[in-house]
Length: 157
Image 1: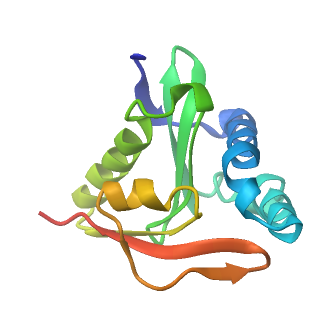
Image 2 (image 1 turned 180 degrees about the vertical axis):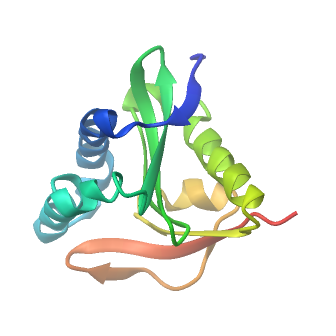
Image 3 (image 1 turned 135 degrees about the vertical axis):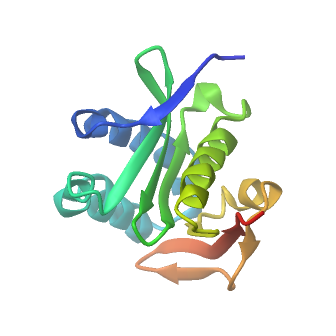
């Protein structure tokens, strides 16, 4: 079991965080996507400067799990309480890191009297989200080649 700390990811470390996102996406999510969906994710999320700049203006915030100085997991959430990214390095899967990231963001949201968090789950991650309490809010959809199921977690008491 790895010892890790969860803390905010500073803008200077966003590049390293997105490298992890891309590697994990390509291995675990991309196989369920068409080439259009893969291109959409890479061009409009990972390599999209406009999206990346949202972390400068705090329209998006990113927290990470760190093993020493190495980022091993990331969670990004918009100011609309929508999780946009949740990825954990392959070597650290099934160690509770993604759950810890979700629990930390839930803790922070509750302090702001926010009791619901939403996300669009990839087919790969859907069973994980269900296991930690997310429920489907609609059927699977495809937009620009991206397959996802809208989900929500009630984080109220």
